[in-house]
Every structure is written in structure tokens, then in C-alpha cells.
Length: 179
Image 1: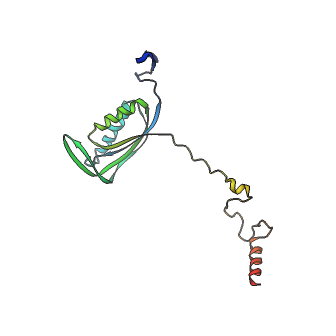
Image 2: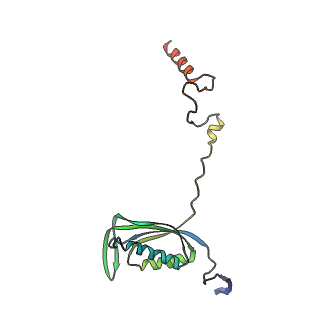
């Protein structure tokens, strides 16, 4: 169901099914540190809670990595119940997801209020593409040179530019050196 609504400044906006505005869907990565006092058994529940935040805002999870305990380069602090606590280690994990661009600030707000999240970053990213093969270098082509390739023939039988095999070339060089 798509409906038109009159917005502020007399501009029309499109509402999609579920009440979401017609916004650009972007690809994001969320990197996060969870406080190390979380028990290993409870860790999957904390991760699913973060995933639920994303999905409740209309996001679609693409991939993720389960958090692993890491040592931090410097201490991070977290204020919970008016008490500041410092941590030297944390669980680090990441989630790649798609979401409407207008919903990212809401996710930011929700994660800031979560007592188990020590620190996080939400980064816009692009879809990964297969790397392109390297281009041929014009320098080599213009001079009649080619980059080195793996030898396809046995050593000593490969013809050089002057019509000599490597063995014949070596023999000629040695004759010149001896004289």
C-alpha cells in the first residue's frame, strides 16, 4: 500500500506499507564493543538484542561475526547507574545490514542507551565487488617488452629474441668471457 501525504512546506512524501517514508536504502556496518562482564552464555542473547534493534527499525541483516574477547589498546569507560567503570578488554563484533538512511540516527540513539554496549560505530559502506584484473601496462607494450611469465618450456630450450636458446646464449657468453 502506497499513499501520498502532505508534508511540511507543502511537499508530498510517499509513505510505504508499514508507515515508512520512501527513503534511500543504504548498506551499513556496525562495529561494536560489549562490556567484558557479560557471561559467555549470555553473549548470544546480547547480540540478538542488537540484531532485534536493527530489524525493529526496518533493517535487514546481511552478515555478522560473533563477538570475540579482545584486549583494548587503552581503557574505555562506561557510566551505568551513575557509576563510571573502566574496561581494558571487551567483546568485539560486527554486523552488516541494510536500512533506510533516516533510521540510522534512531539506531544510534538506541545503542547509546544500551548498558551492555561499551562503544560502537555505524559506517556507511558499499557492496563488495570482485576485484578487477590488473590492466596491461602501456609502458611494456610500447617498447615491445612483456612482463615476466612463468616458464612454459624446459630451461635451455626457450628461444630468445635473437633466435638462440638459453643454452646457446650461455655458451656464447662463456666464450666471450674466456677470450
